[in-house]
Image 1 (cartoon, rainbow, N blue to C red):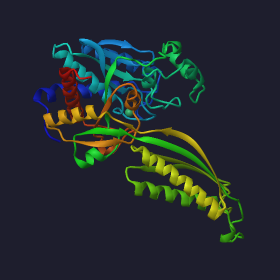
Image 2 (image 1 turned 180 degrees about the horizontal axis):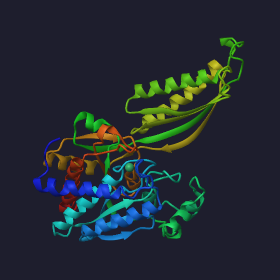
Image 3 (image 1 turned 90 degrees about the vertical axis):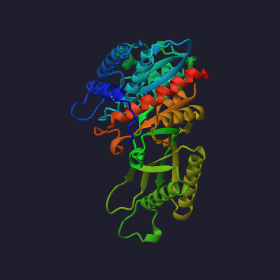
Image 4 (image 1 turned 180 degrees about the vertical axis):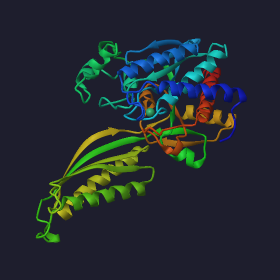
Length: 418
Ligand SMILES: [Zn+2]
């Protein structure tokens, strides 16, 4: 880590980031066991009140939107808006940095711009988004989908959490009205930035300060049912079996090898069930889920083609019936090259090391990218840990990201280029 921060930054910015992260972590439904802040809960409402006060203290005009996002705004000379967004909800037993790191950095960037005393050309908005994680309801990306005009009140009445509470009911309990969700995308957003912890080990292992995201990975998830025949484990000769477990094993090895051979692709079989699941019976049926991801659409398509041919092969050589059910397709989203070039330039100018890298996780930026150029900056995760209580990022890197993104936003204002 290079010491690029001025003494003033080191003495004021770093401790202030630390303090806000710590204070926000108090709003937690699982104290002592990581941070849990599900959307529309008491803790979510409390953290919104807290963040609104922090934004006010930073000199921002605050408001809430229909999705439950907290917004802090600086009016520019034109209404077109540069958005600095990240989420305030967490996963179950998560950490204090996922999402909140970007919210806090956004507030600090706006504070620096406000304190400069100059009215920016573009309006600036810090947005703390709601339900990005999808931990309570099925979809996630709630605020970003709402801002893009893609969430209907009907959908909010149909999607329910594990206790049977619909999004609409949860919204109402938090003082929000599902019938007020905008049905058109916001038109004023001109560029989007999201700072986020990497949630992986690459930056730390390479000793690089900041990451500039090339693309957010696409995810394809399929469920596969392999149907063989349950038989006696002792009396059925090997060449007379239809062993669904053997088929599953061959399939798992094949998809794993294929991802390794493709490069820039990952595949995971993290869920598998066996019937009848008895030690002395040949498996009659195995159901497994394959999750495969890449930032390149071609590789996702190649993986899928490979799975289809594997299943054909299992049918032909082993007589196994295979049923494939598509569970999810999210295509990869490239980040805006123009904004990425500006981020690289800002990093270079302040002397922080940086690298391009893909995001293996989904983020609100991929949804916002549908309505405006979007870019993401990663700060290193200690030990690569995330979605766990141990999740941590050194606040010094967050201060570097604040400086780099702030300089980028100021550069865009100077160039009036959006
Ligand atoms: Zn996140």
